[in-house]
Image (cartoon, rainbow, N blue to C red; front, top):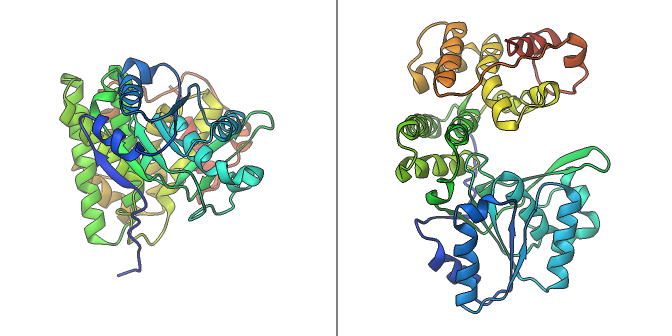
Length: 365
């Protein structure tokens, strides 16, 4: 068995009502509440946090409109320092949670924060206490180490890898305001991220656990097609997203080829102006087909164990496209592309230029 580490930086708290927990963890602090647009107010999370802190006499500063934009992160750090903040609580999707991580870390490392975004290791360095509450489950940022930032002023971007929250608080009811399409994407993106964690895993225990997570997330996604108010199904997806970025999966990986999906999903974002969730979902079956030429046994085993597909990799990939499309997800794009367009986008993968172009061209209707 390979050496491995179970990381336990973040305490994961599953709660149907977060108010008591918020009061407990924020006691004695001056809190900065970081959130994005209006969804946190529509789903009730904003009121629960603000009212709880107010009722318990805990000082509060709100910072709405947060995002991965580095300028917004710098603004958040400035406000946190001006108000002598001692704890960050954040609620929202991946962009908001990533920004909260960088604000909490940048409070002590503002002068060279961009160096951390570009690869300097932040793990174990000082930061403000941090609690993250996902309202759009799928990224797993609340339980992972990564924090992405983009600087539109320069066109540069990167990921600070090594910033963990103290608490990840999962509350399924906060995702009830997502429409049917967005809810479906929470499940499928979570499924794909779990899959990236176990593809090529030689440790039977972590592999089997991952297959179980994938099957349960898929069943929960199907359940929410019929009953969008099923909080158990929403909780399953929410937990699956957090587990996808934990250290519990992939502990026997020999090769990291499955993580190249994150390189390749970026291409439709650039080529078609696609969102991350649509790009990742549409690319994944084509990615498996392309990688099947290089990792036959791993991908055939994955298809068989996760979905019961026991045919060729090409046929199994076609079935997976049909499965995703049957859940209402658009798997094609209408724009035409050229080889030159595809080749112009940097992509670090073992696939060659012909394979990458074939994959992208297969997305065109």
